[in-house]
Image 1 (cartoon, helix red, strand yellow):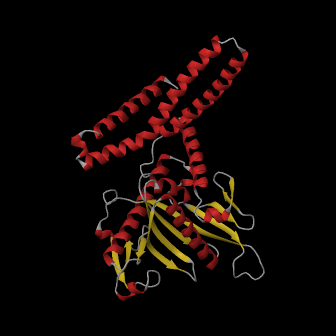
Image 2: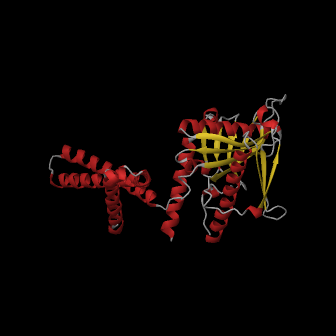
Image 3: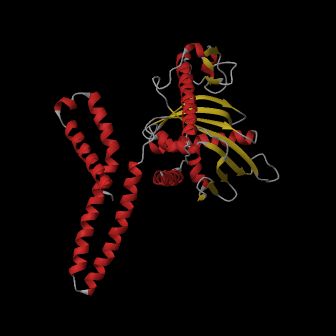
Length: 364
């Protein structure tokens, strides 16, 4: 690696060690705010520091093995040393790549919770059922990751289907992984109501937005209207007894109009807070997309920006295959994926995204 990069890694390692010392000091240990701030920074640096220390260890082993190979005369020992050196050189190259990826600029939203919006697309009732399947898939995935899910708003369509469902996923790294799910999802299968056994194609759209703090997006009350009404449908019988549902219309009657409806809680105040959170997330995503276009940035399928212009994934039931079109890869065991086995797909998307970002940095 270049000397400048080594110096940077040494500086990061020194800061990591300094943070460990700071957190051990009594005055910091009794100050929750400072302790949390130092702990967060330390956790963010830890993967890079561990990779750099492993790199230095491999470098020392390469030096020792090269010395042995240079001075050893026994052919059997030389062969063993050569095999070990080949392995170490391969390991060093892997660590170099890992370090470069870890040094890439972080998405500032990666540490945030995620707000997901699922809507039925083409296909009528079958599309609504597919949206419900996707919601169950993300629910199971969140359970496996130890994340919490809270439904913000849901509009049912037929038995067991959703015309639209909006929910929040809370947990460390939620947005950093779920942002790759934004786009059009397509399913090919024989519906339960299909008497002739014909395969139907339906779609559902997924938007993934980072949760936004109130200080990140300033909302002027004069820019939106709040309507309250009696809840119905999803949420149970109890919500129907009061005007607890909330509809927020942002800049009504203009090209910028955004409508958010929340009725899942019995509390009007909670529904209003949830609706405002969704509104802030949508406005933030819109501003981020505008900024990316101005900068000419391209990201893998515009992940996390709510882009729905193309189909990102196909779930083919007859062939037990899931195809992610962004990376051109097929995955088997479709039932397992719909049961929350998403890590193997998302991991491949992260690898492809990192490779694209590294290539972009190298081209500058």
